[in-house]
Image 1 (tube, rainbow, N blue to C red):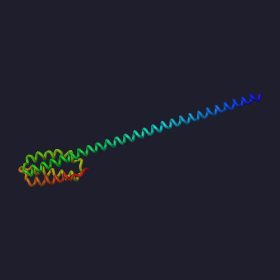
Image 2 (cartoon, rainbow, N blue to C red):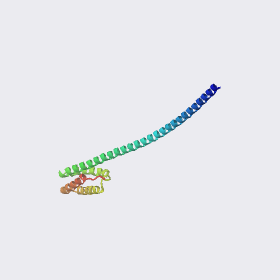
Image 3 (cartoon, helix red, strand yellow):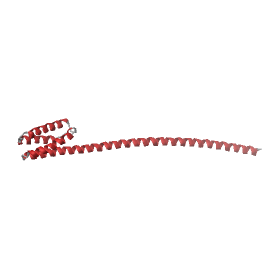
Image 4 (cartoon, rainbow, N blue to C red):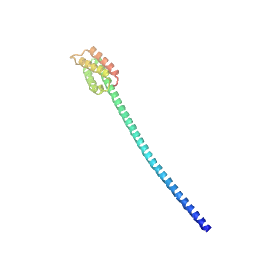
Length: 164
């Protein structure tokens, strides 16, 4: 009978051990599942944050490129104005008022694209200079000294442009 009791006790202890191992295994599995869910949620959040940051960086780069292109266009417009005034001045100095009028028409054509991109005081100075030259060149027989003086003042204004 002692053997039977011993066998029953060993069997009972084995069953209890297996039950405890099974419960521990279930606890480990539950913990692993929770860790897996947490890792998936964290990965999703990190991915969303990285995507959002990348989109912001892309927008910033795009804005910078656009501003750079605008700056290049502005530089080209200023160069066109300066070259036009210089050509007009050269023609006026030589007394060739027909060429001066043709060159000055180019200055007047270039002005609208430039005036909204510069500071108001620069724009006003240039606008006044354009009007003065236009009046001087529009006279029946332009006064060379008046035209040259007005063009020199306009050229100074164009060279002194302050960007807005």
